[in-house]
Image (cartoon, rainbow, N blue to C red; front, side, top):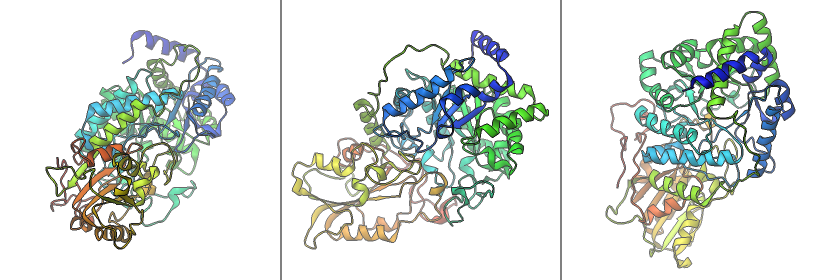
Length: 586
């Protein structure tokens, strides 16, 4: 909440601003499309790096210098209004090489540990602040109802109450950190309730969503269909909790509700969010989200602003946005009262964040990036996130250090595959994309006799090579957003064949599954003696090894029902799932 002194400061600053300066504050540009000099000239309110929007070289120092240059540009504007610099740090400061990468939200949801989530967010804020970034487009407080959705991993759970608890904890961790970072609850409203096959294509917007692939971009950004009571009951509680936790910004969803795009939904954005819920922060659009409203960008901008959007993410077309806003105000299509409300909300948040308080000049200190303490926290998060789905040893560790071990599966020794999407690049990628420890490296560190562990990624061991235990690591390929929409969540034939090859060489078989959602594993149940859902653990896979070896007990429980068949995905029919919500062997 703002105190009276801050409100007075906001009102005073607003009175001194020209229309051009106000419109500048409502503008968010992508870092490759604007210069620090233009930030100063147009009094730009925010700059962002999208997924993979990294400087060259991709080092913490280069990030700090890049962001600092834009901040210096803002300080050179007539009124020296500070800049908000935003990034999608959705599981740690995940764009930066060498940063600590935490488990994705689905893994944190399996921990059901609000204190842990708050500490993860605080560590993320620390690493963000070290690179001078002050706005995180997180947490996602989606409540995914159909795990075919490529953003299911960004949801803590299918259960609104758990999402509310953990989302609020994440907001507190960011905004109450030693150097606070603005949180952004997203995506308002109903992004987790969209129906398969309802994603639209826009002939006037080139890019990835033009795909007609039978899987890609089928449910992400789609339409949530149903009565208002159901929409509010399932998807609104996490926003209420985030507002109560003090979240300063909320991002609008690409998705629609009963055919109406959320980016122009005045009833939900203005009347519900700002009116009924009393949200005093500001509302921001998503990347090119406003452009989807209309082929005529002028019409789209007017619709979005009048619906209640306060800041518009116009990554490349920011000059057009500014020009359109000037013409819309002159023509009476957007009222000055709407402009003043938007800018007041943006300034209010900047004052609340302490951005107007002069900061002492200091050398860039990036020692917190990937620090030992943060990596140890990530290990703890991994340990608490794993769910034991099956074991033949209920009273013993899944794996003993003195057992001869065969390890297979490319993901066992691949940092990129264990981190998943939103890691260094928007979609993520395989390989040594950042600093961390793979499961294979962690096991080798623990098994004193190197001859007792043999690794072949493809599982092609010598015909006479046998061991007490075989460990197969299976993985979903990295993906983000609609690129991860998947019509069929079955394991591939190649994966089942890999499991079968290793099964012939061992007495016991353990399967560790890296995935952003539950997958269909009926084909594994008969072959595997133990199955572990490890989700996407991030850079610190020592936590996986520690649970397998019995250093700590399994405590994670399923934040989503685990389906028996595709018939259960998205429908929640009466047939019992393979494993129910909250399931997890101890």
